[in-house]
Length: 580
Image (cartoon, rainbow, N blue to C red; front, side):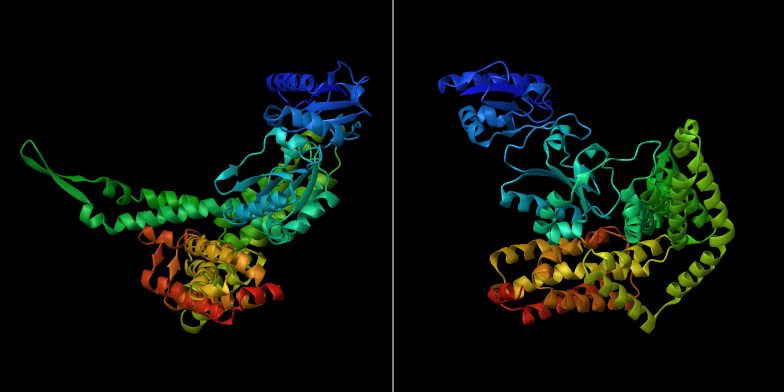
C-alpha cells in the first residue's frame, strides 16, 4: 500500500516531524511504501488536526490522527487503521479554508457556567464528560466557575472538535469558538438530560460568528431570556456581596474585642506610656467597616451594569454602571438597579441597531456614540422618572422587613425556604436567592438567613435519608448521600439533584416542607445573615449570623423532618427504578 504522510496545521513543527518519522519506520516493517505526493498514494495520513496546506489531498482518502501521542504509542496500529477508516477529504466552504476529515471518533468540547459558579458549573461538566465517555467520544469541558477558568481548552483542542457545547446560564465570552459549530444550552438540561443534549448538539449546532467591533450585538444576546440577563448581573455582583459582607462581619468581630485589646501599656525610659494596638487601629477608626461599605456600594452598579452588558454587550456596560450608581444615590436600591439595568441594556441595543450613521462613523458607534447617548438617556430617566417612585417603594419594603415579626416573619421565611427547595438551583430557587442577596445591599439581613438555611436542607436531608434507610438506596446513591451531606454544609442545594431527578414526586415535596419549616423557624428566631454564601462555614466569623443557636436549630429541624419523611416514603431501589 502506498502512503502519503502530511501534517495538520495544529501538529506542531517538532512533534509533526517526529511522528512522520515514526510512521515511516513502521511502514517499512509492514512493507508499506511511503510516497512523496498525494497523486500516487492509496491512503493519506494527516498527523495532527487542523488545516492541510497540501491542496492535492482534496478528494483523496485521508485518515486523521488527532492525538499525535497515538502515533508514538503504536505507529503500526495507525497504519492499519488508516486502510479501513480513511474518509474522503473535502474542501470546507466555511471561513477556514479546509477541514480535516474525522477519524471516526467524535470529538466535542464544551463550556459550562452558572450564576454562582459553584455547583451547576461543575456538575454539568461532569455529566457531559461521563456521557461522552459512555459513547466512546473524546471530550473536554472548560468550566467558568467562581474561581475563574478551569480545565482551559487549547486552540488545538478547539480546532479538532466536531462541535462545541456552551452550557451556560450566564453570558460568557465565546469568541475563541468563532467559526466552529456551536450548540447553546443551559446547565440544567446538560445535567439532567445529558444524552438528549449531546444528540441535539450534533443536529442543531450552527456556525458561531461573534459580533465585530463595529457590528451590532449578536443575535444570541437578543435571544437570551429576560431571566438570564438577571442571572448574568447577579453572577458578577456576587463576589462583591461576599467580600463586602465578610469584611463588615470581620469589623464587627474585631469590635467585640476592641475594649479588651484597645490599648497596651509599655515602659519608655521608665515611664508608662499607653499605645494603641493594631486592633484599635483597624476598628477604632473603622477602616474595615469602610472597606466593606465601599464594597457594598458597588453591588448595585455591578448588578445593573452586567444586566445591560448581557443585553447589549460592551456598549451596554457604561450606561448600566452609571444607572446603578444613580440607583444607589437616589435610594432606589437593588430594585432600581434591576429596572435601570434592563432599561440601559435595551436602550443601548436599540441605538446600536437602529441609529443610522455614515460608514465613516460606524467605528465610533460602540466606543463613543452608543455609550454617550445611552448613558445620557439612562441617567436622565433614573433621576427624573424611575428613581423617586422606586426609592419610595424600597423605603416601604425596608421598613416593613426591619419591623417584621411574628406570623409575618414566619410566613416570609417559609416562602423563601420553600422556594429554595423547589427546583434546587433552577429559576424559582434563583429568584429567592436574588431577593435575599439584593436585600443585603439595603442592609436588611433577615431574608438571606431564611434563604441560605432553606437552601441547605435538600442535600442535608437526602444525605440523612441514605443513612436512616440505607437498604432502600443503591450503593451509588449511598455514596452520593455522603457527598450530599458535605455539599449541604457548604450551601450547595444542587447536591440533592441526583435524588430529585431519580424520584422527583417524593424528594421535592419532602424538601419543600423541610425548607419551609427551616426558613420559617429561622425568621421566627430573628435570624440575620450578612453574607450570601458559605453555609455553616460562615459561622467561623463572629457576627455573620445572629443568633447562632436559633439559626443552627432551624437547619437541623428542617433537614431532619425532610430526611426522615423521605426515608419513610421512599420505595426500595428496584421499585424506584421501575417508577422512573
